[in-house]
Every structure is written in structure tokens, then in C-alpha cells.
Image (cartoon, rainbow, N blue to C red; front, side):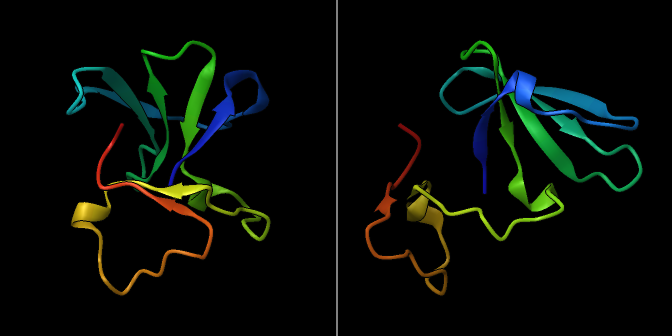
Length: 93
């Protein structure tokens, strides 16, 4: 799960490591990870200024998180239900 947030709205405390890669669409993404356990905290997309792609599973409270759409459904697991009214895309647009 990913959530686009304004870069200035997020404060990450503690040490992190970064790894840059080229995505399927040719854009560079930089992953920000915990150096101890390797969990990805967020991504920094180079193609959009001023935002981060946060991994909401890293938040202390996820009770308020609701998906707007599901992406990469062509490789999704059949047992993951798509809530009614939520758009499902086969791949990244």
C-alpha cells in the first residue's frame, strides 16, 4: 500500500538508508529504508516535486487509512478483496 503525501508533512526520525532504482515506466524512485530491519518507509519519486510515497503500514495509527484505488491487479492475489466503489487498475498508469 502506498500513500502520496506532501514532503513537508512528514517527519522521519532516526537513521535511514536510501536506494535508487529505475521503475518500469523509466522514472527514478528512491526508497527510504530502516537500516536495521530493512522496512521501506517511503519512496521519493523524482518525477513529482514536493511529495513522498509513504508506506502507511509504517504509521503508528492506520485506523483512518482508506484506499482510493488498487494498482497492479493483474498480478494481485485473488484473496485480496477490492472494496466496493474503489477503482482497480491492471498496472501503473
